[in-house]
Length: 615
Image (tube, rainbow, N blue to C red; front, side):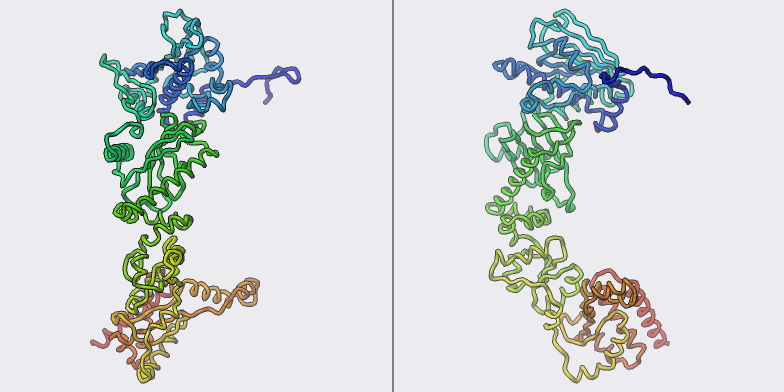
């Protein structure tokens, strides 16, 4: 295969890219924009920017002098504005050159404060729903300039011509689209009106919609943002903001928090979710930039721990990405995130100081979020740690309530450890907190910072064992043979067996075995199996004296008293295995395969023994 001859340019000569507009539109639709519906947002955004520029030219004009009008009747979609308009030179510069924007020409940094868009590709989004774009414009900056018409087509061609002033008597721009047959989903009159309200409900300029039926145009944004309105009382304002949050998010907020950051022109509300959400699930927030909806899923506006609220905000100085569907991560966004986090902390502080009922309802639903915050925020820790709920041997309780009864607070390192000891520790009068859940152990250990009279320590198995009463010597001697058989039967699990008395009497046995001890025994076993090899040397260097598990039988339990009196060796071994299996299941930790096998075997052996006895 030979390549055709290609004429070469002189060395160093400049050449221009050949742009495939259809390919570019396909790229926009599949990789930049989330949906074809953004075409209307881009048209409205261009209209808003044009009105902003017109306002610069005529700052003394009445507030409602300039507006935006939308029209859709099923055959065309039209967006008309009273903005600054374009001259013929502007059209050639800004509409016929892909990638250039009037906002880029000069003073970009300054214009960012006034215009929503910064990229010259917005008009191309119209090719997502139409094959031809018709623009008719007349400049307000150059009143003597004629009207100018631009027609762009999806194949990359366009035409420009000037028209008499009568073609557009007033300055401004009208963009008209003739939708393709497959774009009806986005261009039907009702859908256009819905999209206009969706994107433009908070715009400062008046926006009207006409569906071509001859009736009066329906306002798209009839009222300013709810936080920008005046109300007769603070209660009326609070109810109005809550109603707006319910309308936007679909739930009645537990409370609403007003957000106001004048430095970046941000206003809005945070709605506190009435129910708990899974830890780490970050809800999207509605972010408007200068009134135009930018995103409904802007997670980056708040820190990760603030998953108990959903926000709707309108900002002046936040920077959108190229698609204008998310926020650009820069120093301004980082500062806004920190400032909003401080507003949420202040709300929690106010609730703690002045509204205990609200605080209680909030903590009931969102205690995990507050715990995650308290770990890193000393102020929140001091305010709320005593009121946070924890699982304890007294049931679910706040640390403040628990510390009134227990001056020494013991905390477990895992959920399974707590479940192993909870009933016995409670009966022995020990105050134990379940430290196995996220943040809990770390937070409980900081309780003395707020309550100096309380001491906190990790639960040591020896501490609990010390509260179990020994049996008398005669009972110990009588049970010696059984205990020896039981130790032999459970040696495979590195488990010792002891006889004690403790409450509640309904508990036949207590298995004392921590996760760390099991891991150490597993490592020791691997070292023994690998002895002499490279891995054996490595594991041997890491090996410590492996602590043994301990099965403590309760002499107060009738079943145990019957078991220790068994004089048949095999039955004694089987009963010890059954007691171990029952205690392991009560700990609710995952069972090892050998333990599951032991439970099944001991049950079947006991059943077989009972059947033989009956026969």
